[in-house]
Image (cartoon, rainbow, N blue to C red; front, side, top):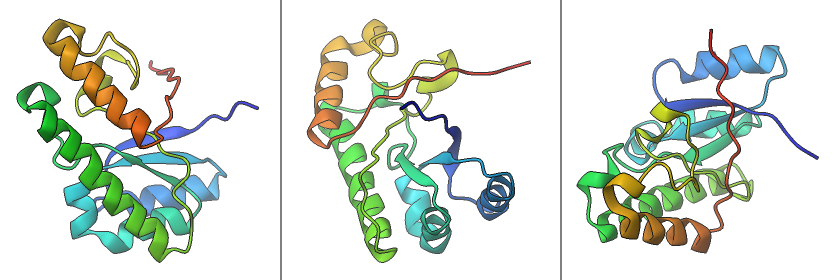
Length: 149
């Protein structure tokens, strides 16, 4: 069965609780793509997302463009954020099983994780290594459709 989620980037921040409440009032499920550094500063808001039955997705630790990082730095961005998300789920007594990743700046062209179009221009070898890291950590690919005016 296919599921549809609204996605929200660059969370958690000062407007996240209002967004969660708004979505809950309308029975809309969402994936909040969260930055690791923001989750460290706002763990209660991160827990609020999960407590209200939404999903936290990995949006890297610092939201810097992966083209500016070494392969190991890219891996560290993913792994460190993965660990933070795991801890937040643990605090809510929930399992971190639905694992999704969105590249920083990767969605400007409406391209999800696992699409080679994002990085082949800049660093195809790095892209393959980053993708293998995501697979090792059991991240799932999203099929994304952007609705716009």
